[in-house]
Image 1 (cartoon, rainbow, N blue to C red):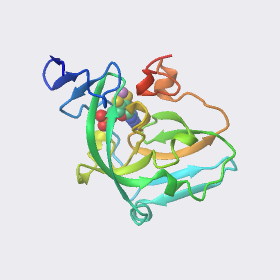
Image 2 (tube, rainbow, N blue to C red):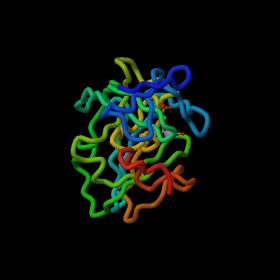
Image 3 (cartoon, protein in one colour):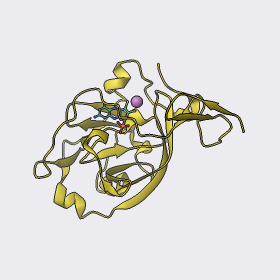
Image 4 (cartoon, rainbow, N blue to C red):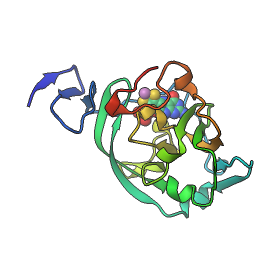
Amino acid sequence: MAQFTRGFGARRRESDPKLPPGQYLATDFPVLSAGPTPKIPLTEWAFGIVAESGDVTSWSWDEFAALPHEDVTTDIHCVTRWSKFDTTWRGVSLDTLLADVSSEYEYVMAHSYGGYTTNVPLADLRGGKAWVVTEYDGKPLDPEHGGPARLLVPHLYFWKSAKWVRGLSMQKRDEPGFWEQNGYNIYGDPWKEERYW
Ligand SMILES: Nc1nc2c(c(=O)[nH]1)N[C@H]1C(S)=C(S)[C@@H](COP(=O)(O)O)O[C@H]1N2
Ligand SMILES: [Mo]
């Protein structure tokens, strides 16, 4: 197996079948935020889903905590080329959150406290592929990493995993979110290296 030194905290294992093309393995957990870390008191936190009818399904922190939770172990891949294997999270499946949401629309915009947005096809949030997570590595999610809650969509580049997520809205068309308007790919499949437009 070929190994190359890539500076501190990073290691390249080109032949690792879990590593998408052009990625290296990070040993730390980098923080990448486009703005300041918002402070969201749990008493004010809510997560809501806006259907195309305008109907909103929303959960307070306590209501969200009462939903069935899952432990998730997954690899994550940032478009800036670091990947991290076997990260462990705990949260609520989007299948649970979307169970009572009926939508003819095929796209979703995720919205965060602080104003960040990112677009994802609805099909990519269903089928056990996406979660709203509140714990990382057995502890409450660090605010820098998106606490109290972030989206986790690990089969797409990590910019789709919106930190400080506050809700989803159903979209008729696939409108670009924050990074997608700034040159990142509309979809972001790490295995196809869909980094930029
Ligand atoms: N709200 C919000 N979510 C975000 C971002 C951001 O700037 N704001 N950055 C994205 C990008 S580009 C990446 S790589 C990951 C980084 O998550 P981390 O800081 O936990 O490593 O969060 C994504 N989610
Ligand atoms: Mo990123």
